[in-house]
Structure formats: C-alpha cells, structure tokens
Image 1 (cartoon, chains in turn yellow, red):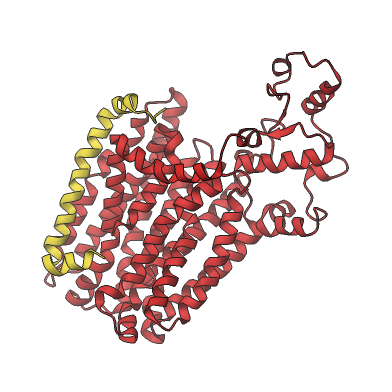
Image 2 (cartoon, rainbow over the protein chains, first blue to last red; image 1 turned 180 degrees about the vertical axis):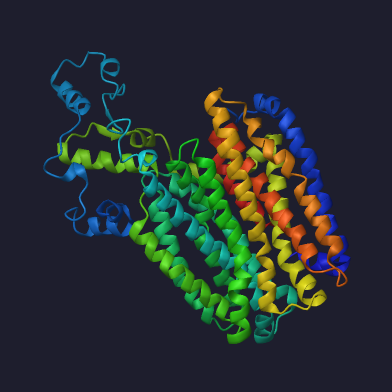
Length: 48
Length: 477
C-alpha cells in the first residue's frame, strides 16, 4: 500500500535504496544482539 | 492407516456421530489393560488416605487426583515419538496448507488491471484486496493461536473449520460483482486462512524434537516463501488468456485437494489435547472421576476471557519491555514489508523497463524461490554438519550461538537491495536486478531461520506471542 507512492515519487533506484538503507540498520542490530544478547536476557523478565 | 483416519478431523467427527463405535482407540477396545501405575493408584482409594501418595506413586497429585500422562517414555501416541514418516507426512500437509494460503495473497497481483477496468477503481485502490488479505492474516493469529492452545479445543478443530470456511468463502470471492464485496471477502479469506501462520510452527514444535525442529521450520518457511513467489506465475498466463477472475478461482482449486487431504489425514498434535481426550476415555472405562489430565487440573484456575485478553496484550508488552524482541520484531516487519513492496516494484521494473508481459512477470517472481532454495540448502547443511554435531558433543551453547549464520547473512539484504536498485535500468540486462533479489531472499531466509530458533529458545513462555506479533507486523506494508 505504501510501496506504490514510494516508488512513484522516488523512482525505483532511490526508493529501493531507501529500503536497503533501512535494512542496513539490521546489520548493526544483529551484531549487537549477538554480543549483548546474554546480558539482555539476564535483565529481561521473560527470558529463561 | 486406520490410525491416520481415526485421528483426522473426519475420523473424530465419525467417532462423535457413531457414539465412539467406529474408529476406536486402544483404551476402548475390550482387550485394553490399564498400565500398572494407574491400577495401583486406583486401588489406593481403598487404603488409608493419610499415606503420602505423591511420593510413592508419581502419578498422584496432592489432591488425590490421578494424573493421566503418557503410558511410557516411548508411548507411540506422543507426537514426539511418532515414526519419521508420520511426522514428515504431517509436516508436508502443514507446508502445503501454508503454501496455498500464502499463494492466495499474491496470486491476485496479476488481476489488478482487470479489477481496475471492471470496477473503475484507481490503481492504488486495486491493490487493496491484496493488502486486506495480508492484514487479515496478520490479525487472525491473535484469535486462532490462543484458541488452539486451549486444550479442550486443540489444533485440529481450528485448522479444519477455518480452512473449510476458507474454501467456502473463496467461491463467492471469485464471483462477486462489486468492489466493496471483493474487499470484504478478501479480508475474510485472509482471516480464515491465518491459522497456518499462527499454528503451523506450533504444530511442528509439537512433533519435532530439538534436533529435528530446525529442518521442519526451514521447510515450513520455504513453503511460506514460495507461496507469494509462485502466486503471480500461477495466475499470470491464465489471466492473460481467460480474464482477471481466474486468479481467484485458482485459489478455490488449490485449496480443494488440500482441504480433503487435511480433513482425512491430519492428526491432532497438541499434547495437552491428546492427554485430555485420553483422560476422558479412561474416565469412561473405569468410571473413576479422579483421573484427570494436567490441563484439566490447571484449567480450574484459568478464565477464558482473561486468557484471550492476555494473548492480545502480551505481544505488545514483550515488544516494549524487551529490547532484543523489539529489535527482532522491527527487523522482521521491515523485511516482510520490503518483500511485499516487491509486488509493486516488479511491475514497474520488469514490465515498463524491460517489456515483460504479465505472464513473464510471474516468472520473474520465481527468483525468490531460487534464493530460498539455495538458502535452505546452505542452512540445512550448516545445521546438519556444523551445529548439530557441535551441540551433541558439547553442552548446550548459549542461545546467541544460533545467530551466527545471521551475522553473515545480515549483509545480504542491503547488498541485494542496492544491487536491485541501481541495475534496474533498461540499459542493463534484466538478470542483474534479479540476482539482487535472489541475494535478498536467500539472506532473509537464513536470518529468519536464526531468529525463529533464537527467540523460542531464549523466551519460551512468550514465543507464542512473538510469532503472533511477527505475523501481525508483516502486514505493515
């Protein structure tokens, strides 16, 4: 639903790059999760 | 064979209608002998009640109830102990079912133009049937997942009833004459199809033990991937030849055989439900009301309404309160949203820039399946040759260990997307953006597998809610 206005306004190149940039945040997040995961689980109420 | 039929929804219905005379369980046959433990526990009634029962007879609770449980560690009624072929068969049914429902979402894409012409709606509005279907199958799990966790209900009634209604609703969806009706029916379709998403992972988790589960979940995810990817292909050429309604008819034809298969062959897999039914049968045979299954004992403390309300609030609560789940949810939602945005981007790229027709556009979508299969192969190899021997040799490693493939794979989505973005011009051959999508799909597959193993292992109590939320957020597109 939001994709069509996105691509019409920005064009495919910039539109998909925007999405690509957002998913780059995932890279950082995943590595952080790996290193801090144990500590986060210790602090969390829901973890084992 | 008879067992398969007996456990299926049709078998259970037949039992109900014939008053348990057809398709009998072992307990109901004349030659059945109660296991030793139960005979002893029942005999205790005649003895002095001040004996500390819970110590000498592990099946007794503090209240003097006799706990109905598996007859032995290797009890064949326990889904974890089913034969490999039976487990694989059930997995195959769940995967087929998931495939059909997910296919139903994207199969509509090729009809958009036809709908625009027939009902006179704008291009944006003609994508609503897709959006509403996806929204509905994100919202559906909030109801179906808690419902199937209630032992009295179990998994089969939810699957059987909703999928039968799904088929029934799909017929008017193909014939409907106004746009509003189409929208509403598509929403209902998605809602009724959602148990595959809500409970599919739970069914697989019921059956497969810790070492087999990664393969089961990977296969199920592949089915979920192939659904939207194959949808446009299945309907593209047909719509070119026969008209836009054909995509919706294809949903009917796909779900028919799968429904028959499900009704005849899908057994109940939820442990509390199986034990509850067994307790009922034992009570009937022995006439003794002290025989209760664990869920019946717990049930006295649970109120249905608060259970449901809890299930709706919990997903939001865990997302807010826990950063790891928050990140994982946002990332999964983003990834799914991007995946569904392909359905808007592909027509522009492939049809306008490269001059594909609707059928060929459907073929272009199959690149996602290529990515998924390659990723499935890589991930399965990793689990089989690296992780499983590692876990068997050493102790259980910390859960973060399961995220290692994701550390590598998380570079894939941005790389693939940038590749797609900057090579999708008419001057560059069309295989270049397609390779970008293959890279994206494969990497996302691996990342999702790692997350699906990490979260339930780390947060077992809330993993049900996590899957609900993750399904719900996939509708954010």
